[in-house]
Image (cartoon, rainbow, N blue to C red; front, side):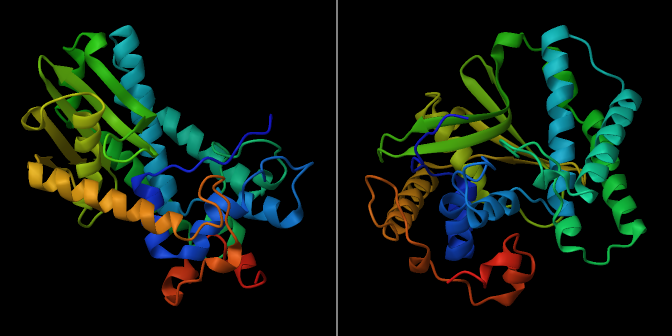
Length: 308
């Protein structure tokens, strides 16, 4: 893999990690940089890179659902045919079984190159006692989410749409703000346009309240980058675990708040850098969180306190 520069960018998830723990943020975006190359990176960099790619079982559940829905929708848009639910279940079951085995055997430590799509579970790395019924519940919830997806209105909506109106299916897009020169990234689970309107979907696979700021970022992207009027933008939160739908619309004041939040977040992130032009950082400038509950679930816990 060719060398390339660690460029600064902003995303909703990056901002959240920065707020949670500055040291974890450093490991994720700076300390692990270059660790994909086993032959060139030092042991610390390689370890940080591998650990940053771990997912816990809840994240794995979410990824399994999102990736299967992506496959379903892309097949539907490209061929006009919907894979039957039973075949979707069979496919995701086989993928999850293979992922589980690969992760349990620790194969992610051996692979050179990107680990972005390599199965690597937090529970296998740190080996907490997870009963089989917990893993079974995790799988059952994936199946429940897929069943609820097939019952949703989304399938009918997409089936009736011309394929050129589908703007995004799980695509990560980099754009630039008009109000800030920095690059930012947004990933829309699904977005399509109807005449002068845009409808954005976001799949949720867990319980609890969502952060409306995330939906605000989606609306800001549609307004800024895709040039839709604010009153023509809706973000539909489809919770596939609890099986409910909530439609979000936004006011100009909320969009202004999102812009202020992003500007402040970028300013705070850059204030920790040694050189903002080069996007370079010093580990000791990024303090650890004092909340040990965060540490208990942190991917970097096995190495964090060995580094000063």
